[in-house]
Every structure is written in C-alpha cells, then in structure tokens.
Length: 185
Image 1 (cartoon, rainbow, N blue to C red):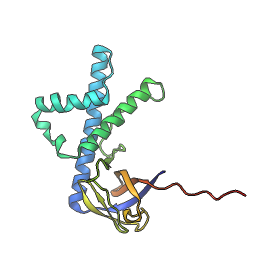
Image 2: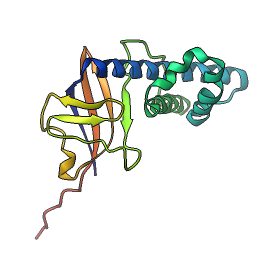
Image 3: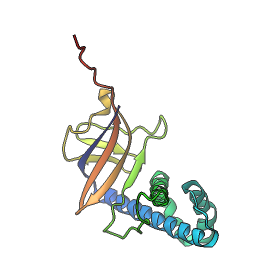
Image 4: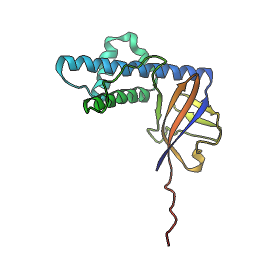
C-alpha cells in the first residue's frame, strides 16, 4: 500500500539554491515543451510525446543552444517529470478533460522539484528529524517523527519539494504494509 506524507523542511542556504535552480529549470523545460508542441502541432498537426521531446531536448536543442547547458546541471529525474507533467496536461486537453495547458509563471505556478528511488543504491533515507534526498543530501525536518523512518522497514518510493511563501515542504510516497483486518465472527 502506498501512503503519502507532507511536512515542512528546513533546508540550508546551499540546499535552497539547488531547490530554486531545479524548480526554475523544471518550469523552463515545461514551458519549452508546451511551446515546442504548439509549434509542431501548427506545422504538422502532430502531437510530440514526452519521450520524443526528451530525446529532442538532449540530442538537438542542447547541441544547437550551448548557452542552455544549465538544464543539465540539475537532476535529470526532475526534468523528466516536468516533461511528463506537460505531456499529461496535453493529453487531458486532447481528451477534452481540461483547457489548453498554461505556461508556468515564475513565482505564480505550482512547480516542484522531484526525486525518485530508481535503483538499489539510491536509497532515500529518513530518520526522526531529517531526510536524505538525492542531489540535496540530509535536510532537516521541522515536524519530527511525522514521516515514518526507513529503519522501521518503510520504503520511500518518490517525493517532491515545493516552496510556498518562503517555506519549503517535502511530500513523500511511502510503501507500507496493508493493515491487517480484524476477523469477523
């Protein structure tokens, strides 16, 4: 069973810089995907998938625009997730479940920094008062004991870091065992 937890964190100044840089790159890539897809659709009436865009971004766009190499300086998982979110927004639009995707504005959009447990070595650890996040290292948790610790056998699958009003929050997805139901007599 997967369960999510969200709590406030207390990052250092260096970690705040990494968080803001990653969120900025994710916003930029999301908007670039929307603009690229809109342009391609107007020209060829075709929708560019997230995977195709990711390949184009890495193999064509970054080679033609060496001044945009800063995109590679942040977690590739965060960039990939922002592309997938933009693709989902387009798919909802084409299914008539929502309006045309909107470009994300700095400071006014809900853009997050994503992190995932991809392999055995990339373990996201959590102790009572801190959490170890890939690319950030150990980050202090303000509400101690809210997120289950990894020592108790819980596995953190993925998470996001968001910023609201100058405060930072981590939201994690934890794999837990199904609670045993009482036998009915």
